[in-house]
Structure formats: structure tokens, C-alpha cells
Length: 343
Ligand SMILES: [Zn+2]
Image (cartoon, rainbow, N blue to C red; front, side, top):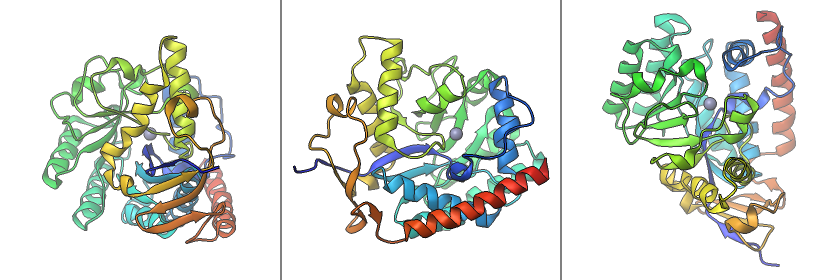
């Protein structure tokens, strides 16, 4: 059987820092709404990150991306105790494994004006030094208007878009109104579940994450924007995310076909065109939506990034998978201890 080939797949919204989160210490109480999930889970995790944890988390995430035929990741990062240089750590970790990455630091006023300034500076420093990136913003509801304006202005000056969570939950209901005068076509509008108006930019749909957080269905098919798919940090298996995007769409509209979700998956190539130079050979002979929507467990046999084979025979060629997993497990143990320590 000859396997089908495709370009490398693109994860249009990831959080590589969350690759070590699985199995983390349970929150003090059960979160009952989206805002509490952020406060009790993710904002406990991000402040415990240091450079070494970020490095091995990114390597594990990059390894898992290749294992799923994903060669390009658009990442959104936050590590308030280790801001400076954090995007370099992620970029270097991905380069070592052989995965393309586009980095952003999620600017926020949650840690005061100094925290927001440090986040803006990290985006500016990384991109000015030649890094591939967007200017990251956590979300409008954790930023002042001045910070949103500064991020939009920095992005304009650098000639890149802004990568921002928008209207993911009810907490950010006024986000679209506050961003309306700032957003442009090169922005990544992540989630867009509770959008009360159209904004320019590409909507990045993350169906698994939205279901996991109980925030509702984004209905990307009803929007005029280009759409791409992301995982929001839950791995980088884009065929799996495509299948989920399809069934979630179908649950909402039984006349939906896999062609829409396939269009969202392939929309990633408009954001990360370099992935079109990559080649994935799959262990299944057909790579088209009506097959892949209903065929689970399709895996890459070989992955080429540019001219280099980076995955072959079930293993990465540039790094030792067992070592990456072992070192990542050590850093996960450190991360969990730091989370408990910080309370
Ligand atoms: Zn996210």
C-alpha cells in the first residue's frame, strides 16, 4: 500500500508550555466556570514555569507534533516568572526537534504594568532579532486599553499581526468591542465563541478545548473570516482536531460535511506557508476529508521538513525520543512541586 502524502500540518494555536500539565496537582476546589478554570488551573501553572521547564515542555510538545505529522506550530506563551528570553527557549527547543514555530508572548496586566511591559518587550526583542512571531496578548479582559493599544501598535511597527484569545468565555464578552478599532487582517482571533460582532483576522477554532472548558460552540462556519484549527495546548494532532471539528459542526448542523472542517485544517497553510514545503507520508492511502473524518489512528510514516527527514520508522531523527520523554518527566515532577510550593 502506498501511503498518501500531504504538506506538513499546521497547529494554528498551541501552548507548548502546557505539554507537562497532564497529571498536575488538582486545584484546591473544583472550578465551576471558565474564569475559575483559568484562575485555579492555568494561572497556577504558568507562574511556576522556569526556563528549564519551558525548554523540555516545548521539546516534548514538538516531538508529539511530529508524531502526528504537524510540522508547524503557532505558539502562545506565558511564564510570568521567566519572561525575558522565554521565546528564544521555545524557538530553540522546536528547532532542535525539527519543528517550525511561530512564537508570541501573551501580554497581560494580571501582573501589573511592569508585567505587561516585560511581555511587550519580549515580543519586540524576539521579533526584532529575526524570530518568527506575532505579538501575543492574553485576552482583552486581562488587559487595560492602554496595553491593548501598545500591543497593536508594536505589532504594526514590526509588520506582524496580534495573536490573542477573543471571547473564549463570558468573562471576555466586551473583548470584541474593545478590540474592534485595533484588529487587522493579520490578527489571529483565537476561539471567538462569544463574538458579538465580526472582527477582521483569521479565526482559530479549538473545538476540543472549547468543549473541555464548557464555553460553548464557536460556529466558525457562520463567520465571514478565514478559519484555521488549533489545539489550545492539548497536543498537536491536527487530524484528530479536524475529526473533532467535523463532529462538533455536525452536532450543531446535521447537514454539515467534512469539507468545512478540512478547509479549516488547510487554512493553517495560509498562516504558515512554509509548511507547504514539508512532506508527510501517511500510513493510509487516501488523504481527503470524507475518508479521514471517519478513519481514526492515521499516523505519519515519514515526515520531511524542507529537505530533511525529521521523522522515520516511528521515531524522530534529530533527537532521542526516550531521552526527551525522560527529561520532560523530570521537569514535570519539578513543575508539580513548584505548583504545590506556590500554593
Ligand atoms: Zn489558548
